[in-house]
Image 1 (tube, rainbow, N blue to C red):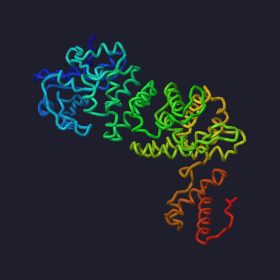
Image 2 (image 1 turned 90 degrees about the vertical axis):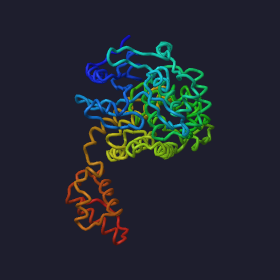
Image 3 (image 1 turned 30 degrees about the vertical axis):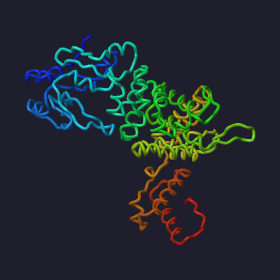
Image 4 (image 1 turned 30 degrees about the horizontal axis):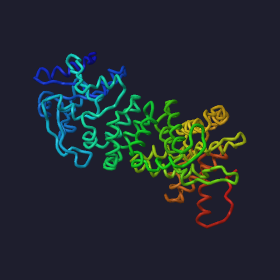
Amino acid sequence: MKYPVPDRIRKFASVFSENGFSLYIVGGAVRDHLLGIRNSDFDFCTDALPEQVIGIFRKVIPTGIKHGTVTVLFQGESYEVTTFRTEGAYSDNRHPDSVKFVGDLEEDLSRRDFTVNAFAADCTDGTVIDLFNGKEDLKNGIIRAIGDPVQRFSEDALRMMRLARFCSKLGFKADPATVEAAKTLSANIAYVSMERIYDELSKMLMSKDPVFGLRLLEETGILQIILPELSRCRETTQTKVGSDNVLDHIYTAVAASASLDYNLTVRMACLLHDIAKPDCISVNPYGFLRFYGHDMKSAELARTVLRRLKCSNRFTDDVCVIIENHMTRYRPDWTDGAVKRLIRRVGKDNINNLFELQWCDQIASDGRAKVEEYDGLIERIHELENQPISLQDLDITGDDLANAGIPRSKTMGDILNQLVEMVIDYPTLNSRDTLLSQALRLYEIRLNGSDQEEKPIS
């Protein structure tokens, strides 16, 4: 089977061949083509040295020239090209101590991680090159390290997480010898940066079978190192459908989020939504296990985990707030103010993520999502979501308060929040004059230390 090289890449490759060099597509794009999966994320390698690539193209950016990588701008496209290379020892288990450029494709491919990632396709005619029996492993559904797995994982400890991720992504089994090597070297994952660990973890969560990879991380001992808060849930008993401990319940929720194709926020929340249960366990008077307050404490612990993984503030906030509220249960007797406060607390753009987390939790607990119970709440949210709910919805700003003599301070922030609470219950009061008058009244009360009851102007 030949790789269908796009015309634009053939033209790009022709510049190399005209100058006596070769160009190959390597890695995932070729693997996915052999599996019948669309993938246009191309990686290129060449026998041309970086300075030679710079010499034959007009526009080249030396993006990683120390390691042989440059970015070529050609006919409106950008192509990242890396010179064939071998690598020295990895004394820090993360980066090669040295890089040596070579002129041999086989030597370059031999340094890669797994046989199914070591394919190359000639960019001139599409010939697929398989030097490590990768096609056989594709056929048998196996992820196997190239050569000695201990050496591969010693070179870069993150490859142990990539083993789990590719098993999750492709639905393949892991080669036993490769798994044993990961068990032996699992402690080395501590040398890998948290940013790289998070990148692999998030990709695994977004795969078709993230639980397969999570169980492999647990089996190899890696989960205990990168997510000890999650790992300890294995020893905490609970009674749920198909689960006799908290970790299996979490896995079932994660599996549900993947089967329903939910986004990363929901999948990460499923992974972390119950991680504080070991800290909240109690037995009620009837002898049943209970985990009172686990939603709030799990949100706190999840924030610690996500900060350690160097996640963005926005992503961390979105995940933690839906974990904090995942035990919220709507009742038809809720006031409009209660519905709007839920929207404010969770965020308009995040409210559906909360519902999806709750549905996955219900599937893991009861075997099905009680979606029909949300119809009334969703209808009310649609009716109320355009009413003033947040600071941004106020018909007044901090600048207006400052111009009126209220200094920018914590006091101003408190007053603005009180105004939001007021208009949530009394939306007709959301006018600039009314809000300014009320703000000045609240500020005067603060200045005078008055205990006067603060009522909205009517």
